[in-house]
Amino acid sequence: MSDSGTFSADWLALRTAADDRARSHELMDAAATFLATQGGHAQGEQDSQRGPTHICDLGAGTGATLRALAPHLPPPQSWTLVDRDARLLAEAKRLFAQNPITGVTLTTAQRNLSDSGPPWASTPDLLTASALFDLTGAEIINRLARACAAGGVALFSMLTFDGVLELYPHHPSDGLMREAFNTHQKTDKGLGPAAGPDAPETLASAFGAHGYEVISADTPWELLASRDGEMIEAMLTGWAGAALELGHLPPATIETWLDARRGTTDRLIVGHRDQLFLPPSRA
Image 1 (cartoon, helix red, strand yellow):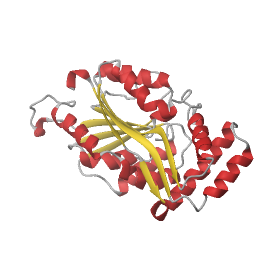
Image 2 (cartoon, rainbow, N blue to C red):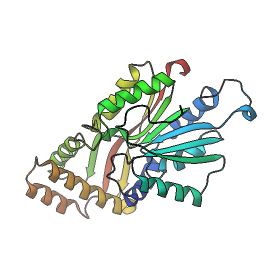
Image 3 (tube, one colour):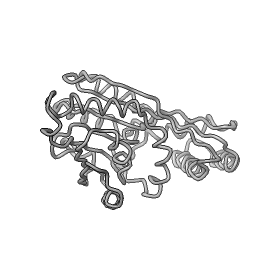
Image 4 (tube, rainbow, N blue to C red):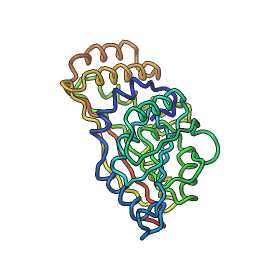
């Protein structure tokens, strides 16, 4: 969620409601079934004989994935939140201490995904990430797929941007701005040239090469002015900033679009995909 080091705790808090509405409950249930029946415990063990399920969350930010997913997974659970930003990890620990989840323990680890080697100290039963892989390069995705395959680790990737951006009512410059944003998403965010909207396909190809099964669901944000006005405003401002930074459009075109969009955008759709990758020996 934040491994690029570019997101603030305020932005992560602002997007939480939209994230939680979008997440696929079907895939959460599939992840729970995997862990309960085929995860890191021998099939047929009694619950009392099982140690905690170990979940490692990459680009964890302030712990939104933990709070959204943990209640859907079988207890007990041991979560490790991994992020490059120590301040976000500290906030994650504070939020968890304020609202602990029964049967869940938490540790954190400061780490950059561009570092060599697996991003975990001990092999997890499930690797998770939210809104992360569109910010990472194909090299990192391929290296992660190799590490997961070597350890038989399942990956649950959530809220990966897929390039869909729809605004209502329409404006003549929407298409140009969409192209500019998607092009900017492929620039280096600190983890190599980013996969951007190609990330869901890049993930599927990388893990498919190791025989993983993929279960996928479209999980778009549907932002309504009546409910999500502050987030729509933040999205439009960030979108315009990305287009200006890219430099492919005249600044006047971007400014005219932003001025026309502010206060008039009734609905904004942002496409995402959730993907659950199951290792071949446990699919």
